[in-house]
Length: 171
Image (cartoon, rainbow, N blue to C red; front, top):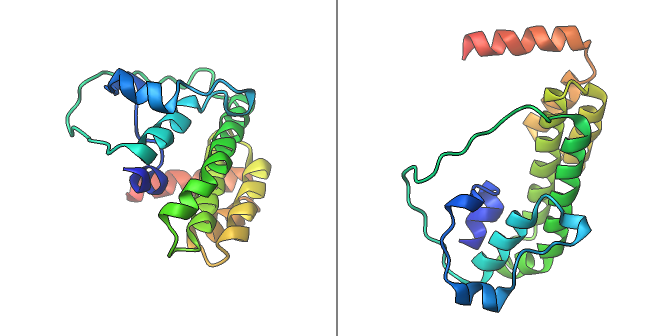
């Protein structure tokens, strides 16, 4: 349900969702505000999960084609900015669900900035990635993953590429 979405991220593909009309009559339609443009689905799933129990069928029901074309830094920045707006919008509800866990928002933001940093690395933007890993460390200063990637972004990009290829061969 709600906690799974927060902890695992948005794993729901819009074309695979089945919901009764009454659900949308109660929670409303997709939020088309400019701030969350591109993350309207994530916002919708959080709003649905807040009121209803989600069920997951663990078998492929739809085909989803992911293309890397159009994957550039400006698209990435827009996508992460809208996702950040959704997280901010839902922070009060999150606090209610995790009343006994005061560090949940720190972990969520750390994971968010770490993921943003990884995506910027994929876009071959180590400087931008470095900034995001530093933000991740601000929320989780003892995160080994964030620390390692933060330090890697200080290295020569050619060396980082060689390390990445080496890691792939070892794995």
